[in-house]
Image 1 (cartoon, rainbow, N blue to C red):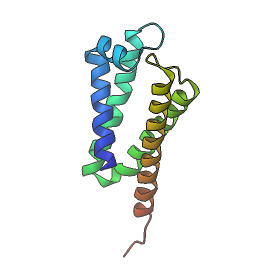
Image 2: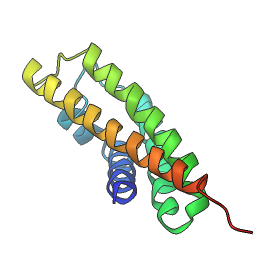
Image 3: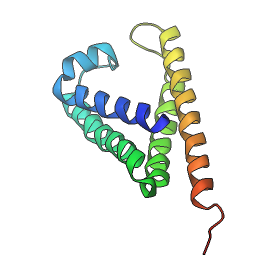
Image 4: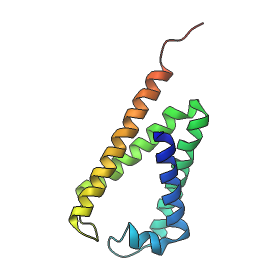
Length: 125
């Protein structure tokens, strides 16, 4: 379930940033001056991560690598939001975003741990 939810979220937000940068910026990213190049960069990173997570639902061999990359991304994204909580709609929302990202990063890390344990579990000949 974590793979599906995180995968869809990543793919959708990445697509949103590329196809409607003004809307994305005004809704989620109004930090400083809008830069469409950076918004496209975000989308170009988020979409493949989301698609890899969704592919990992079908292809078990993709689970550990996709979850490792996604977990790393979410941990770094979480650090960014916890260091800079000055959200354009108020610091309370900034903290809530940071906490939401932290919970998601923890869920991804837990899913990674279970996937790695399953992958390295007892093997039969």
